[in-house]
Image (tube, rainbow, N blue to C red; front, side, top):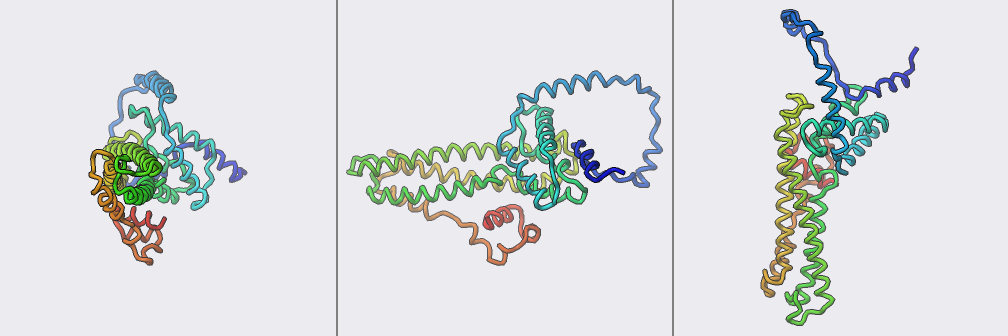
Length: 322
């Protein structure tokens, strides 16, 4: 007799998993009515072409990058299936999965793995078919760039702090940020440091907005994905595209606020007398997503919240709970 451990070790060697159902009665009739080809299998020479394709793709993998956000997603997904589904995923399996993602990117002519490629993981990291839906839903909830590490939420918090600190300083210097009207050197230095931090935040948010736009394009083209079935691609697109567009709007709005604060701290853009008023307006425009939800709504389970809220509101609900 073969032990369960032996069977698990054998199953672990098969990377992609699929649940296959018997052919329906109508489908069987269709199969039986298909014409029998007269071409002998020996006449079909695909071995050489396939061998060359495998060689070309394998040789390209060293040039396919996998950024840290992909690695973090794989790590967090393994934690989810282990802690919530009780599924053990071996290191060997994860390494093979990462290689498959690189192969996926290469066959699409891309130089890096994108988050949409990680949809393949729903066919890899489950043990019994009933777990596949949970893995898929987890992926759908975490595939939007910046969602797992809360880029926009943390940046908004930091920007609010910088705006408040800037407001206190420019009130202290009566709007003077050049020293021409008697502002202390220490205060001017602090203002310059804040401006430098805002500049860094602007660059980071620009990159994040570009990542979201790339993600939106790839999600919109999911039905052309070589490794994802048509029905599966349509379902994923319907869920992921609204989330990505809402996240993009949030990021672009925050980027504009960041640029506005940088301009308010510039010497030749805003009049000294207006500088405090401009920064005061920015500091008072922050929106706390927690105010959108009652205490009862914040206590809902994720499944209940999905039934109650649409995509954008659901994302804000998750951020409020955090």
